[in-house]
Image (cartoon, rainbow, N blue to C red; front, side):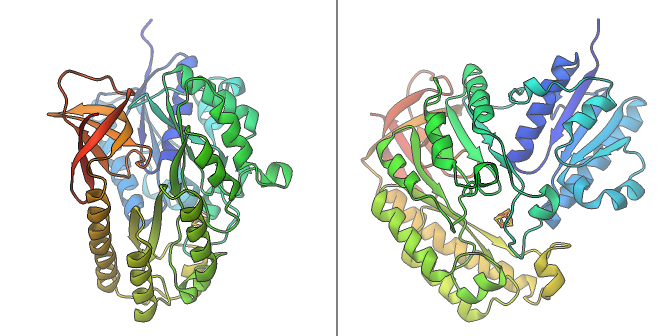
Length: 430
Ligand code: SF4
């Protein structure tokens, strides 16, 4: 029997990727032939949208229009749209895009499944269809956020913080390991809060400990640790357990108290400095990644100068700088004016990235001659492309290895660093 084809198109962040892969598993069990981001004609196209910032919304709308036109041309097929942008703008979207057959907000897999006449299998909620590389996977440990950052629309879109119980996450990790996953990347809007809604206390260290016991998982990486309430116990675990990558993703967003206050962050300059110092003291060789926002309402030239000077002084191993974007319904958009010209914001971001490029180049140069363990991601041209425990996929630098023969993706090997640029390293087998 020919099975109906469903194509799931995923936009936005890794949390959306996880949601799409889980939905694909439910559809697969229901008898559909599921594809991810396929260019071929399908009976049903489901677009999982991002509505986080202006550029992401535009990309979502363009993608919807492109698929609607393709469906019209082939004179068959249905178009469903789900995810963050729908959660945020459903009313306006329904009016503007009548060619879409059905709209679903976030966390509505059951509704999509039932719209297709299938039963939702709760017992399969930890299973997914792996798309892309199979040796690493994102593990979403919670949904939503209870913080009140002024610039952020996430709590409005994704709701209050809800942790997934440890037992379910361990079962999901076991499933992923059985599919060949070796590196688990823990994600959430905020990992730091994990477990508080379940038990009244932070449970991230306990969860990480349990995940290190899953057979087949060799690396565990933590993304998005909110600075305030950071569980220091994790640092000792990182130092003693080689399965926990010495990698800390801690978005500080700014360093000036004036801006942090207006951002409604729960940390100030002195807390941030103290925490970063403690991380360096307890895990001296950890790679620290951060993100900062330039041009937030109220950021003066002096505030920006202190941010730039702090970045130069602290020398983060990884850093992303973003232009402030005035988003609907956020505290900032309701209470501040977006007073800093876009050109100034752009210039500030460029100055940060120029400085970071110099820092990154110097840090990379100092690695020459060292031997590091890496995981091979793929073969590309003359190189095998790999990452160390200090590099997260898709966002960080890569290590380009010259070697004869072919090494399978997901293989761990030791390499010696032989050269560097600002954002990549070159190596050969050790
Ligand atoms: S902690 Fe992150 S997701 Fe939560 S409100 Fe702040 S920026 Fe948004």
